[in-house]
Length: 516
Length: 70
Image (cartoon, rainbow over all chains, first blue to last red; front, top):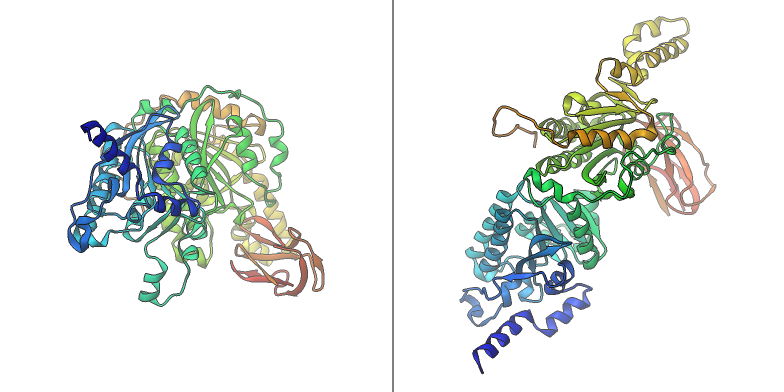
């Protein structure tokens, strides 16, 4: 056999991964193989593989006789819609994609490469966990992985795709990336699987309940985007990437620009009828969001988690922006611990990558009462305030219908970070609602009145007339203008244009001591 | 059988059904008020109201059973 024939044979063998039987098993589960995922994800013919020949050096338990093609993880770079991305795709067909020393080395070096070259990293996770035959070597390479990804955090966007199992310490890896996508059925993530949980705690629970979509997209909030299958997951990843710059350098922001097909100053007449004037009637804030953004194209993050607030990416005049909005139709749109965490992390991501923020308020306050008090609503709510004030990106706030109390400051008013703040004419902006205020200020007068009920109503009406409107805030300059609902998009577009070259100078410090 | 639970703490301001009523999925069963908002509680399925566990004016916690359906 000639050298070139040998070369071809050798490569072909590695590219067969775990062999036809293992590939068939993977397909039976409804999943693609790592190489099929890469082929589907990258623009045709653009993928360059690195470390194809890398192999383990373990001799224990007969592993010296075991071939593990590409070490169970395919690493390389290519183009996604014309822009470079680095990936590490775990290959479950090869010794269950187990995480050994050289598997870990390839994975963490892929992140280092992405960081050093300033391009996004996408990890495709599908692994049976630590390769226990390698003992201490497998444990240490988790440390390499965590170190690489955290040192890259804030420099490049990192996206984790849970397309198969990801259990044990390894599961910290996707959680510590910027966005986590999870495939229904196949994607299972957790600090420990059911068998371990059973032996250690006695709890009897199946893997889907413990580690599936409901567990993380709804309950824990660790999953940001739910995917139907592998192809849906890769499509959604491409969609998210289109909103993100390659790295944290200011000029990289321009990569997210798309020639707008939608007039940035478009007037939206029906916005006035979508939001009920009465402050106590719920409505779906998505109806507002999709009308004001370019072409109604909204990529929602954490769609199933803490639904009382909405966060996601959109464009205004072709520029990528992050949206943070109240959702009055879920739990009154009031902010609880989970909602505060959701907003704070999103705001910090946008700030890291120079993505402006648009905040839409219809918020009665932070959730009060024992349940949230004891969960720590003050320290969770504080994360939002820190995130907004620390953020130096352009920030524009619109009060759609109401903004009260701590939530007015917590969701970014002018002095907690907004460069511009607008309010609709029926917006109620105040320290508390008229009912609460009147019942405190006039408690004695109401109690001693001949007709306490009539007196209470009178005082509430007075307070409402005096303070529950957008004009008190506008008179002090706390909001920049009271605008017609239909002109919201126009005002956002104009403000964003002005803020395009915003600069902020602050005295040096290591970081703010955010309430973690 | 289905239990209709409260998705938020608050005060029951109105109950719109009585025991024995046929209800449809998505039908408004009662109204909870909290944090300046009145949130309608919808029926999760078609059925018959078998028990109403709350009265108007009563406070409820998140997760409390409000109405039983069969």
